[in-house]
Length: 273
Image (cartoon, rainbow, N blue to C red; front, side, top):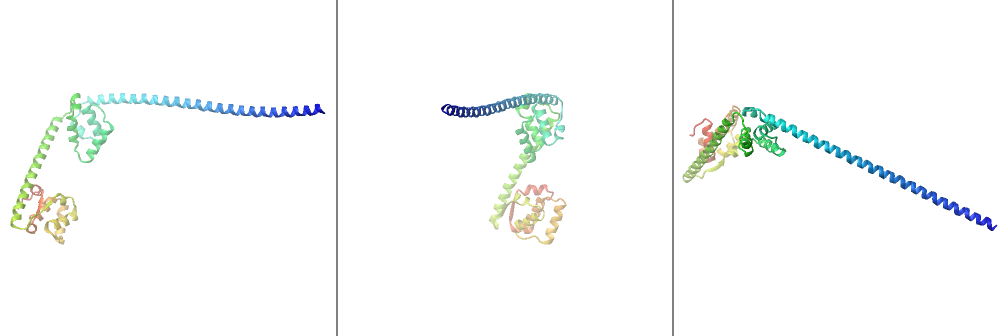
């Protein structure tokens, strides 16, 4: 009996040991599977890194190739003779790129293209952009040659001179108007000073209403409103209408001085009275 009990205990211990070994083997197999999965993931990551490196390398080669192509195209275009008229016939980004290529010998950077595009949208003439680029040190170094550029420079200089002369005349006339208003103030009620731009910014009926209210101190009558609207539609300058009202007997009685009106009224085709 003792031998049987000892044998029974030995079998139980062996079964328990076998169970522990089987559990350990399963844990090892699970760990091996996890390690294999981790190795596969690392290998996949390495492969992805290699692919990314290859893509970046190819993109760099492509960018370098594009830069070379652009340089060749710029050189071929720059040495082709072009005239100011050819440049002015272009518009938008095409005009800006052509100016950079033929005047500066390169393509514009994004900031330069954006700056000149905004300037043109805000009313800067294309002739001024050509002149400004032609006068840069960069254009002088590459020796930019554009047919008709000397005539453009001459016209641009004349226009700038005319603008300065016109500004001087306007300042002189405004000074004379102010002095005249001061002299009239000594004899009658002080003149009311109005900037002409405050009236010119209105259009159509709103313009007529504001002229009557400011210059004559009343609302326009039906006939006057209809007549001046018809004249505006026919192309009459706003400055002429302002002058007609200002220098009328009713306007003189209202004693309003419009700054900047004299030379505009003279250029509108109606002499001052």
